[in-house]
Length: 224
Image (cartoon, rainbow, N blue to C red):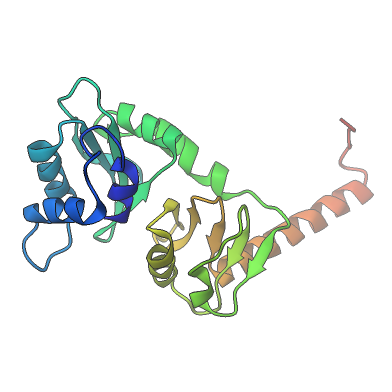
């Protein structure tokens, strides 16, 4: 709800709306007591707002459902990554444009912009959390945020979502299909504690190996 309200507020067709009016309208398409899903969201858009388009991708960035608004001027595009019955919204305008142009099925461009090229960045702004509740209200930008030991990333995302309106821009799964991190709309990268330790160990081993190669005269360095 917070994501939809953020995206539609003040747009044509929603200028007379407040949060409660939108909520009451949307939940008219949802069975009592249930959370709204992508199909119900599309039913709402079809019935009430022909300026709204919706695109939903699975965790591997394959589009599995879409709805294109019938109005020539489509003012609102909602994009979701769906995993384990949770809808994680995308707010970045560039990514939303790429997603809206993708055909049903694969989306190589979305995958290009949202996978490990973005995930492998490293910098000095590292914050280690003593408690997972510190995620709620974390107000820094462009930081690597290390969750406490034994915290599951689903728990971290739930706490982040409660305090920040579900603004999760990118979800990362490791090779075993385990959700091990995410990036928020302030470009903070949240990592599990063990994921951070593995990265640090890899960098140290790589630099040690490179140093040995240099000392043994097997690597030439060129100054740029």
